[in-house]
Image (cartoon, rainbow, N blue to C red; front, side, top):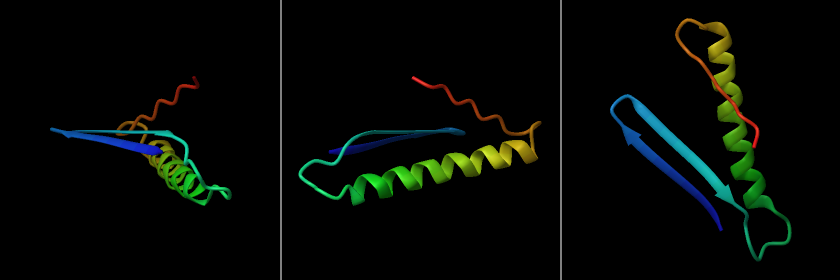
Length: 62
């Protein structure tokens, strides 16, 4: 099961994605969720590069 947990607050959004699809042989769902998540992150990084005084992106590897 892939779980997406989103919390919305005043001026704040937290999105957490974890898990893996089960009972599927081809991994299409996992690939789709991963692609959408990574594309959003890459887009935010580009915005941060264009507007470094306004946007900061902090990525940590675990």
